[in-house]
Amino acid sequence: MNNEITFPYPYVIEALDQYYGLKSHSSKKSVSKEQSKKRVLSKKASKKKFSILIATFWSFPHVGGLSNYIAALSKGLKNQGHKVDIISPNQFSTSKVKQFREIVTPNLKHFFTNRYGSYNDRILNHKRLIYVYEKMLETIDLEKYDILHAQDLFTANILGRFNEFYNKPLFYTPHGMFTSNRLRFNIIKEGSVEEAYFTELESKAIQYASHIIVLSDSFRAPLIKLGAKNRNITTVITGIDYPVNRREEKETNSQKLVITCVARLGPRKGHNHLFEALSRLKKYTSNVEVLIVGDGQMREKLEKQKKALDLSMVKFLGSRDDVPSILNKTDIFVLPTINDSLPLSIIEAMHSGIAVISTNCGGIPELIKHNKTGIIVEPGSPEQLAHALKFLINHKEARDKMGTNAKVYAKNHLTIDSMIGKIKHLYTDFWEMN
Image (cartoon, rainbow, N blue to C red; front, side):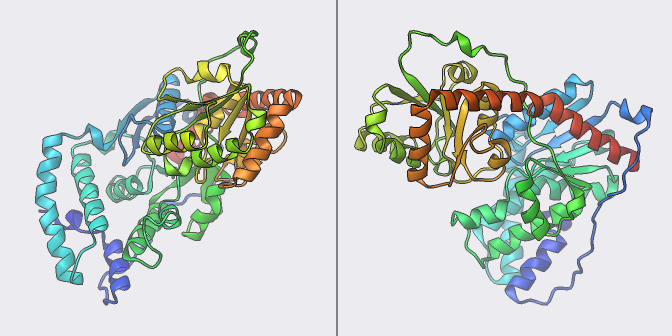
């Protein structure tokens, strides 16, 4: 067995040794591939058709913004003639995964127990997943790719480790700040060994990356805090290939004002705050229909809340594959999220020409210009949310104007062509430097 791969990376061992108060014999070496020098691209380079590997530590395809982003990125690049492969854990052989898991788990337990006197279950399980991913990656010829693009800190570490041999341009796109988000929601505890472990992986992902592509400027400060240089970060706001719709085709005989929320039914999406806000507006919602699109772990709890608050206007539609059609009949789009980066559902609503109410989270204020393309409220505030809903319910002219502004902005800035053009330029720039 290759202990160098099986057990934590040397820099992780050093971080854990420091946490447990051991004297580490390893030494951290900077492997930063930062290349801030700009070049004028040659005509040949600008027309180069790349072979690209997109890597994710999560299942693909899957429900959610990350999967949608990868699908849009892959489709846009392929449409320009590039070759794109996507690697994700669910592509791995189940039998092989089981075999590797059975081999590595006892060895990891022995390693941690022998070195630290015990082992942490979350770190043990996570390191096992990294090991299995690495073993699968060993079967892939990375030499054939011009560009490597990691979609999370874990694949940035894994590809970065392999890339010390291949020396390819390696891009890193974080879709959230892993450690700080888990601290915020008490998934891990401040000062814990888990915080030390994941923080080290986040810092190393930054060092391994040739360049970091972020979804919004909100990522810059936390990445810089972890060691990134501002000049080594480029913001490329997500664009989508959205079907053209004609909102004038909405049924004129429909007297209901439709409010729609498209989101996974999870604790971070804030549906409970939306329901609390609606409970404050009952005298304004007699002709209102609220459509909840999506499914998830919170459905049963939310259905009970709906019943307890007597919100007869709320309808759960579950997961749907006709979201553009639903949005075409929508007057107000609401996403009451309490933690997000750059939700694609908001971008879809903007392309549909709908006034949006959402929260001051992540990159959302970079999409929604307050009182121009929608309304921004503080996360977790049913009072502010109720006030915004009341305003747009009662002022058709304002919501129509915001919807029009949103559609114009989306058409100019949030298309897949715009996103792919910027990313392709970065690929070409760093390929030439390599």
